[in-house]
Amino acid sequence: MPERSYTVSVNRQAYHDYFVEEKMEAGVALTGTEVKSIRAGRVNLRGAYARIRDGEVWIESMHIAEYAQGTYMNHEPMRPRKLLLHRREIDRLIGRVQTKGLTLVPLKLYFKENRVKVELGLCRGKKLYDKRDAIRERETQRELARVMKQRSRV
Image 1 (spheres, rainbow, N blue to C red):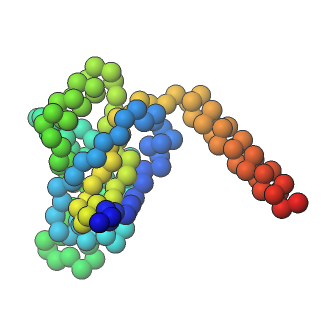
Image 2 (cartoon, rainbow, N blue to C red):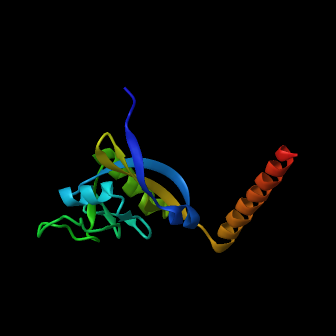
């Protein structure tokens, strides 16, 4: 049976600001109104980051809009949310983040068989010249694709 999953949100800014060295999947502890709001696509990962506190991993600054049909039990949009990882994964992340100066950044939020998952990236920050190189490379690829498209028409 094929795995049913679909992406809800992608953090494009993270790919612009960081080099992604490693990716991992984590579950997210959410309330019911948060899940309904995510299903409606009302989530924003821009500026979000993960932090290790007291041996647990928390995602901060992830905005999940209030659920429109929610009652007084509605959630707070910017509250920190706990990520669900195995102990050995958390211990390995603690070692990598402390020794090598890496950052945990959420790259993608998606559903995997009716469970909300987040793709965490172990990232190293880009310098300004790295960002310029990436932009230059993207523009040359775009130009090359444009030329190839024109040639295929002729």
